[in-house]
Amino acid sequence: MDALVKTTAGAGLELRQVSVPEPGPGEVLIKVHKTAICGTDVHIYNWDPWAQLHIKPPMTIGHEYVGEIFALGAGVTGLEVGQRVSGEGHITCGHCRNCHNGNIQWCKNTSGVGVDRDGAFAEYVCIPASNVILIPQNLPEDVVAFFDAVGNAAHTALIWNLVGEDVLITGAGPIGMIAAGICKYAGARRVVITDVNDYRLELARRMGADAAVNVARDDLTETMHKQGLVEGFDIGLEMSGSGAALHQMIDVMRNGGKISLLGIANQPVPMDMNGIICKGLTLQGIYGRKMDNWHQMSYMVQGGLDLSPVITHRFHYTQFQEGFDAMNSGKSGKVILDWTG
Ligand code: NAD
Ligand code: ZN
Image (cartoon, rainbow, N blue to C red; front, side, top):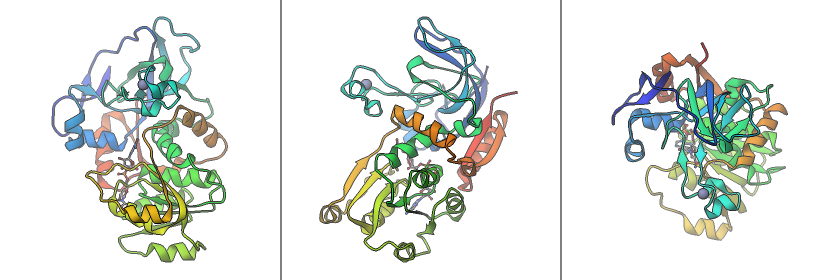
């Protein structure tokens, strides 16, 4: 089969012929229809310091996908060939304390599809049956292709009760834009998003943000007042990985506000401890998704959450190079690769 493989320790990817994986006991073989390029794939493609530390070539990469069940390994019950599926990309051990208490996103023995084992940028991908997510037939495949990222946004946003709350999102990358849509869908009063990239801020506006502020140029406090906020933001979603953005967020939160942190910083970020203490802020780190987020995404999209504005590029998988160029240009939302035909 064709697969996008990180063949050597360096920049780029190769389209290669590799063997179709054999589903072992308890595993499912999925025929891939559509995939989406994630920021993590771009790190691997560019071979940045994070990738150098975590990726062991040769390996097929990719973890955002939708497809159909093609074959079942021995002992798999409750699933059928032909069902439309995606997959939770974190394969967890099932026996640590967090796996037992339902917080699989914190499993200390996680193995990542397309990071620690062969991934989904291929005609077929093999995962444990317990990671298979059934997808209702009426959801658009282009959107389900990036449900993995939607799950990150849902996890970060929906740990708080958003009804009637004023939300600040820092970082209008694909996940920040998606979060803007989710917050409005979940009943937030005002959603303000920041970035330093006008192209992405415009996409966030299309996703429903009430205001999109380029903090390299414009004053966030002014926007806050124009939006009718008096005491500051109730909820903050940090989705940039920028220390400057986190500091700015802490400054504009109301006393007693709540912040969830998804963005991953490239280096240690000095912390405004006194700001957090004196305002009585709650900070929650977010890693991955909860399994329940998959259920929430399916039904938010069925209920009218339109994620299509996030998709800016579509290519056949053989044009993967153009897809990665688009991601690296900064002028993209989600890039979809088609593996059918
Ligand atoms: P992205 O890199 O595409 O988007 C980040 C955005 O932040 C960019 O558009 C950038 O211009 C913007 N930004 C930079 N400086 C800023 C500032 N000072 N103020 C406001 N915005 C600023 O990333 P993404 O794919 O949307 O993912 C969001 C973040 O979440 C990334 O840091 C990613 O590494 C991280 N992530 C974490 C997890 C997890 O499990 N914790 C999972 C997926 C992604
Ligand atoms: Zn575990």
